Image (cartoon, rainbow, N blue to C red; front, side):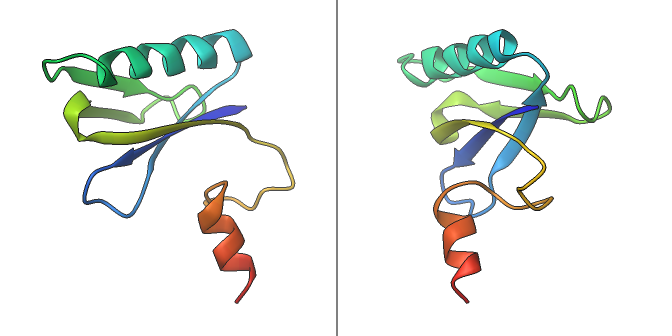
Length: 91
């Protein structure tokens, strides 16, 4: 599974959706990058291929970062890749 994590302004918890195929994840990543650069805010609707009932909609002007990462069995469930996971493991 490939995870696409969105960090929103003023929100400490990221929004995450998954894609099964690398090409699909890359296409979604590029789509999000495109709307982030748009001068007018747009509604971005996302679905998850891992949890089919999971849907989320956010305004593009509220997205501050997007992270594309490979999910593997060694990452604990519910843990975010990157700085948050590192800070958590140092406690």
